[in-house]
Image (cartoon, rainbow, N blue to C red; front, side, top):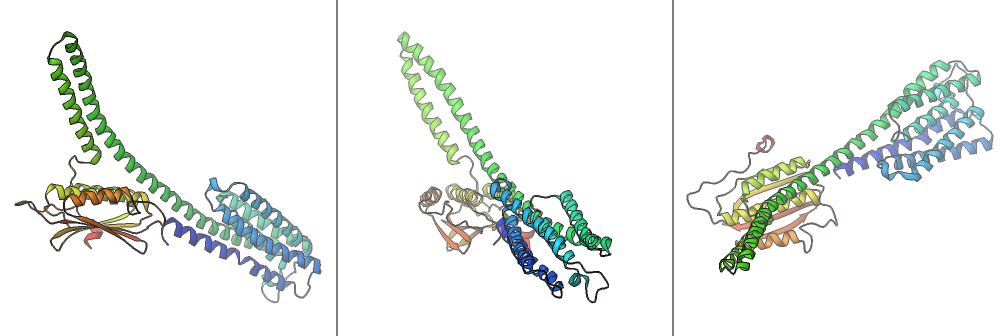
Length: 415
């Protein structure tokens, strides 16, 4: 599992497992109360609050790590419940959990259960709120937890309040900022993914604008000429001049020519070149955050076959950007069995996402028609999460024309 989804699963699972450590830390406090156990009612309340606090911490993290627009009312309700349970835990710890004075026979955390309970509850409460808290609130929260542990010492008449407060501050702040760092990394990865999608959409939009400008130039000029010639033909017709027929025929010829030009613009027939398309593919894929390798060189094919392969590159790369979560795309040109073979392979196939490879895809059907017109063909296959498109055209070369090199390989590709 790669990309933002992989980072999210790893971050969530790690933080959930850390939250599940809370009951084990509270067992340390329970061990410290073994010689002087609290009343059964108090012990039962502590057990219930421990289970609730752990569950609410995980739920708060789960809802809080969702993008802000998706949190909504359930997140606010969960935060309120977490705060209520934490407050009840603190009150019960201050009222009913003992804090034994030193000297200790063993370690302080086995003989000072009240401080352990206050530290644990404060630490995991702050950790659960890290998706919505920044540095300053986390520091303030850590200071508050340290002050509560010191207060517990003071209320019990136990010395060492300052020492336990400092220790609690370091532990709580370290834990909270560890949580925050994990959440921050997830947020950065999400922003990078959003930027990648925006870049891909921008590349597609720029291509559409280019086509729109070309169509505007062709149609605008043609329509202006048609308007002038039609007005002239109308005026000649009013005068009974036979030249009106010639002008109308000229308008018809102009309309037919403009129609051919528009089809040429939309279909990309203007200077479609395989080497140019490969260079453009590298630029678009790199801008979309996809690692790209272009292997092989452009052979000296005649224009129709080169144009057909150029269209394969354009259509395939467009659909890699729009219909996959690809991390890598490889384009390979080679000669095999008297044919020129273009292979385009990418990972990150999204299950159930329609694309040119899907049943009845118009993009793939169009490519088949183009390649069939020059005696070629196209095949596709899935290899795990990879999609591979193979286009083949007969290697009919142009005499006395040297091979056209493809885009200069990236230094990593040379290795």
